[in-house]
Image (cartoon, rainbow, N blue to C red; front, top):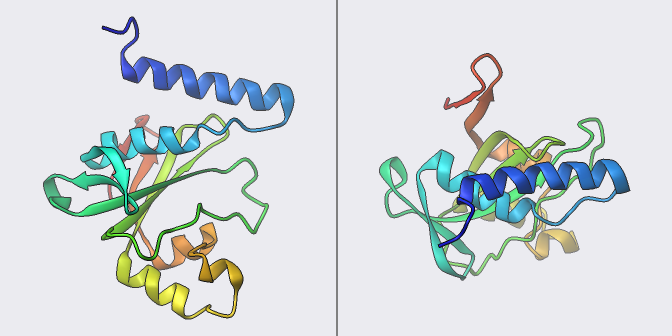
Length: 162
């Protein structure tokens, strides 16, 4: 058995990643794993042990049975535009994609969810772009076509759903 519990490891990963960026100016590539952890914890998802076909988790509760692809993005400068999410697999078997937006401390701030249909429509409407052909979307576009399904509540320090 591990000396550390997963939630403590993730908290330490956040702390180290934030400190590393402050020290070096470069981010550590840990946002994907932190996003998977946060999505499972905050949206009641069961992570897939073997990821494949763009499916990272299966929904429980209100998302029961839904195949979910999880993306994470750390926003270091809210005024800087052009930020993109990781490439989507249009041929994958996912039903929706969740995007966990994190602050400079790698803490979740807001989670957006977009259905497969909305993403495929957005990609089809921008087929002239090489990025769109690869299934890449900007964070701004993802937010515009998605729904905020969780956000950090500053008053209580916990999350709230819309």
